[in-house]
Image (cartoon, rainbow, N blue to C red; front, side, top):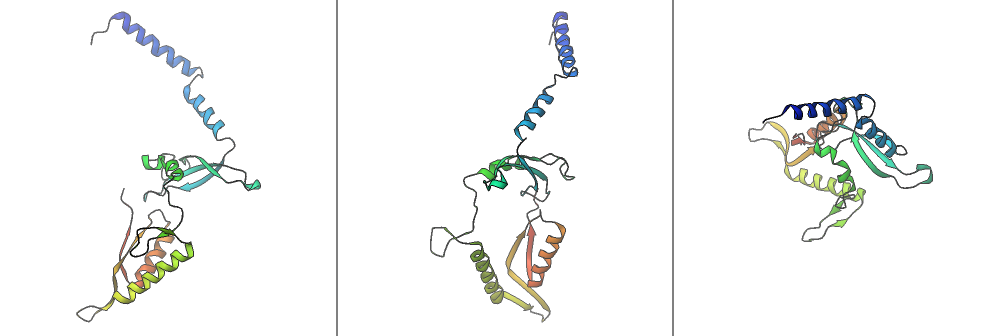
Length: 195
């Protein structure tokens, strides 16, 4: 690439003037920071955790709505938490798209069940869902529990049941989940830590 002397001085002059303007305080980052603070000035900030993987990145969720007047809160912005030691304010593309997930019209917000032989999903209550899950677990465990193997050794296994635990849970929750499931004899226990 051939650059003439005149073109070289034009590029250098443009770079010098741009950096000089930024040093004098006319930086675009300052303007963007003012716009951000104006946008979120009246919002309520809530710390939470990204639900996608086992990294457990911290997020800040900004909502509008007056709690004293019982108005419904609306999430307007989600960003990485700079005070979180795990991600220090950064988010992966999945975490950066959390607002789209929360606002999705296809997001399931209640338990549903499809009865055998039906092609329709019907909404049920949370108590009904938990009761139904417990009944299915008990029936399966009673039918398929292996107390002793072929050699007569006590093994206490429940091989027909699997459990996928949350990797975003804290250590205590993970410990209790594992202890309860191992106490039931479950063998197939895993987490969604696939990043």
